[in-house]
Image (cartoon, rainbow, N blue to C red; front, side):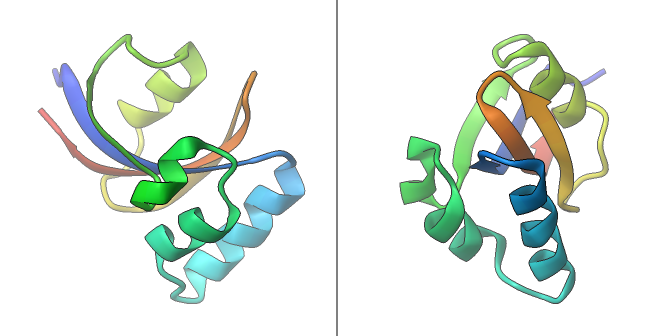
Length: 93
């Protein structure tokens, strides 16, 4: 069972914004470019990179998604108290 992961994310205010971004990703848009352009999280400066983190470091809904979704495939929207996330997990260890 994985205890650490590395992920990118895009945080937006509305579910509709999240679905619009997922549509752009499905059409081949670059995840990191969209993060820099649309994310409300400070991680947007790094293309949405959250670096490596441990299981339990993130809020429960985000944590559950990161440790269960398919690697390298945009996943979401995941609703937390911060807004709606689109997550791309790079790896889990």
